[in-house]
Image 1 (spheres, rainbow, N blue to C red):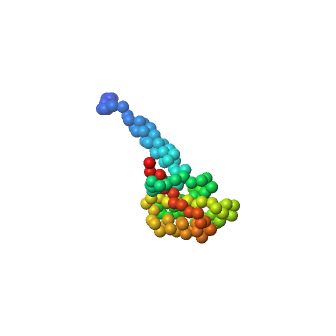
Image 2 (cartoon, rainbow, N blue to C red):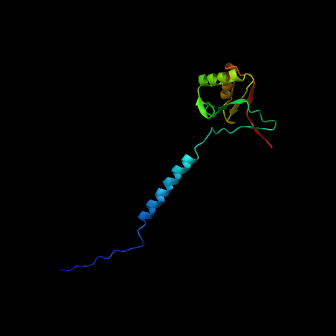
Image 3 (cartoon, one colour):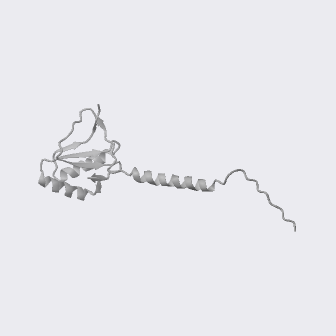
Length: 134
């Protein structure tokens, strides 16, 4: 019997386990930073104005995103829910200042719609939020 030893040409260490570890780390960091960067609030980029001034703390904020969706306290609301929430707050404080925070790229129609809903709920002290230029 002739037993020959088959020689393998090793060109280096087997890197398959290392590729598995790197892939696992890549997936881990992708998932971690996706969860980590989830917005805690609505990401609205306000337009800038030189004449902006801070308002008192007794206020009600309505945020409008680029798609026209409205948010109150970080929760998306329908027009009926907005009217109800605002009407409840206005019963407690009829002179409450209502601020509409609209993204600078939002369509004008959506801003007018939000202002109409505030007026329909009984809010008469209105303002548009801006970032103050320095």
